[in-house]
Length: 318
Ligand code: B12
Ligand code: SF4
Ligand code: SF4
Image (cartoon, rainbow, N blue to C red; front, side, top):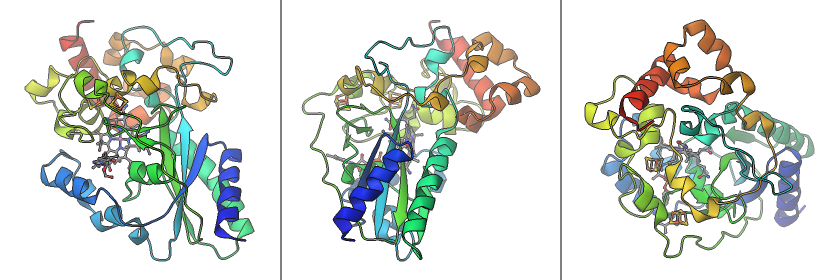
């Protein structure tokens, strides 16, 4: 089978496995390697020391493992604002859930995507005996957005998010690296033009220039990745967020009305929706285990969630 036909078949299988979009990226060296090295040299990765490991693979995806030839990149939408009939889906109310990043309200997307990727991988393995493949969702030394852009899944926006004309930036990325030659897709054209809304809206100045995110100032970094107490000058600038931050996406015109297939696993489940800020502050360990089973918010642990909730209570206008 020629690489073009094989690519078309595998992309169709990716959609059948439950992804919303799929594309193929070639594994040539990063076109933005300089930007990545500057990002690290300035310390924009803040306390994420793990980031500088295997930097050669980030710069050159063919080095992720020997023999890999192409990446089948997939996107999974979350939190659609309109249902499939075009009717508005109400946002959660209260003093907690509107301040939890949309991607994190339901089940952990790593698990949801890995299940679908495993199904896809098994189907491909059955059709191509001897093929080697590996799945990645966040876990590998991979610039997933740059690869996704090459695969035509979106264009990188000035807030550094991958944006798609229909899905906005409310989607997550995963990849299957394969020892198989596949014809690559064509990247989309720039979607930002002269817009700078995200740069202006970021409350902490974490987007000091287009395509540059300084994690030292990013609410998402502090509320998810940071361990221990907040430095006092940070705590008062978290703007009420309890886990992650969606501001630079909410203001993006491409996110005004994305439709999406419903993936109920990624939506806020009723048992968790009842919780408010005061309830989170009072939460005991047993109840935490029960309410947050399968949630990506467990990355911050109960201590981290309560630290974030206390900062939100002390400093927000709520
Ligand atoms: C570390 C990390 C973070 C860090 C740092 C974020 C950052 N911007 O780097 C923190 C904790 C802050 C974070 C926050 C979030 N993250 Co995060 N994060 C990652 C991770 C693990 C690595 C990102 C990375 O490599 N950063 C290094 C920088 C240098 O790379 P980059 O931002 O992609 O920059 C590239 C472009 O800017 C480009 N570039 C540079 N100059 C120019 C110029 C032009 C003209 C162009 C076109 C491009 C360009 O070159 C760079 C290198 O390729 C990825 C998963 C992965 N392995 O890729 C998820 C990932 C990027 N995160 C994701 C998400 C959902 C989020 C949040 C929305 C979560 C939230 N709601 O709180 C926020 C968004 C913040 C934001 N505006 O980026 C998704 C993004 C999906 C998408 N549609 O883009 C990813 C891909 C995870 C996934 N598997 O789906 N994240
Ligand atoms: S996630 Fe929030 S703090 Fe981070 S860059 Fe976007 S708007 Fe700024
Ligand atoms: S808000 Fe404007 S500049 Fe920022 S990512 Fe969206 S379109 Fe691009």
